[in-house]
Length: 102
Image (cartoon, rainbow, N blue to C red; front, top):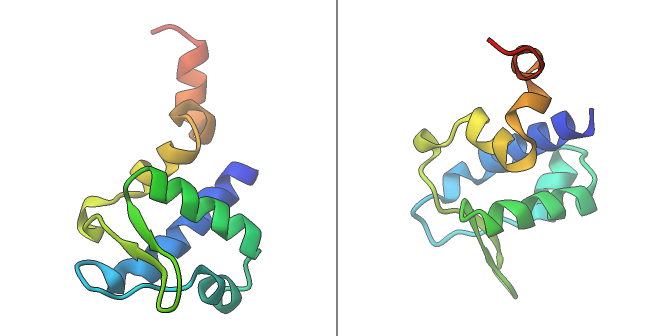
């Protein structure tokens, strides 16, 4: 179930960062974690993964944080889920299909 939480938390983070797309605004992940009562360390790991994937950008220092680099319209739950888990592990039908040749 941890992967489902990861995907859910990643979607929370991306939703919160939607307002930063194409703007020079950065949001602090600790504020997002606090607002949604989510574990900060876990949210930071998710943010780092999204950063390495080129979906968000990070800036250090005062006024720093994260912002969205990819258009929210181009992001799907599937895109985000595949960053954190292989498709056959988060969809029972696909998991079954992997085991049974068609």
